[in-house]
Length: 457
Image (tube, rainbow, N blue to C red):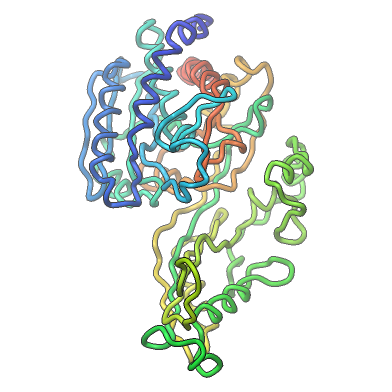
């Protein structure tokens, strides 16, 4: 395995050229106009995986964007690792905040700058190259399958039925995912928990048309004003979510586990400086790490209504809108929470307006036990390349399909992410450090080596 560094060095330029071609495809799943780009991206992934050494690779249709499935079965009796990743990316808005064009990757300050550089093209691509190395050097110790979807950023609606319909094809011993982050570049960590997600759009309707704010101001309810008032009632002065029974099923973490979480490196001054904020904000009684790892949260992700063009237009708008998400923890069912939110939000509205709550998508939280063989294999892999034992962490983010894999396929996932908090995923100027990119390619083969063993101590 000590030749992996040499392989990376010899092929570094090619790796980056191939990744950049992948990044240049604007595969934004939430925008219908990019549908042809989704197909192009799937086709490019097929080419990459076949060239890396897969025995077969298919672009399999779904009701939405296709799934790229590939496999290399060297012996059915051996363990099987299935790689999961996604080839869709987030929209780039606001595009004017990007320092360089989002789909023209550029290396600057030791980082790749582009949409998808980290989430998830860069991280998924690491697996293709690690797999290539093991195949080309005849060191692959187990069977490997790839499953790459094009809808993760919109909640994976087509992947759930795809898994239901292809249980035999997708049989594996573990699902390996790189779509998470490490604590920092010098502190390896394995994500052992993901929060669930609920996402809704709300609409508040007042008069049947936009009204002159002088002739009607003070006499007719303004939907934007009402919406803002309703949103402020969703949390109290302690930043505790006020939706009735919102916390009913929340699993409370023991003081012992909270103490272990507190051992993770964390510098509040650096945290605030990186975000350019003077003070942090969150649920009273919990640390920042706990707020984003073991506690649920509620956020307005977008809000609009009325005139937004240049200059002034004095109107009371007919409608106001918002997109609201809630991050959930184990045992919270996003369907139940969404219904509780809907009932409560509607109850907050005065009779002067009408309210609609439309669920968009959601998913369950996931927890990965630290005593399972895959975790131990990942732990040893990080120890080999970083020289230190990784810290188990719970992420505030969500990959809803990971819990779906366990429910539908009965397969656990191990989350070996190499991203950093500074990578600005989902934001303008997304980036991925070259050091992390190459370190991921170096570390992944050691996971295979350890996981393929009969017993992992």
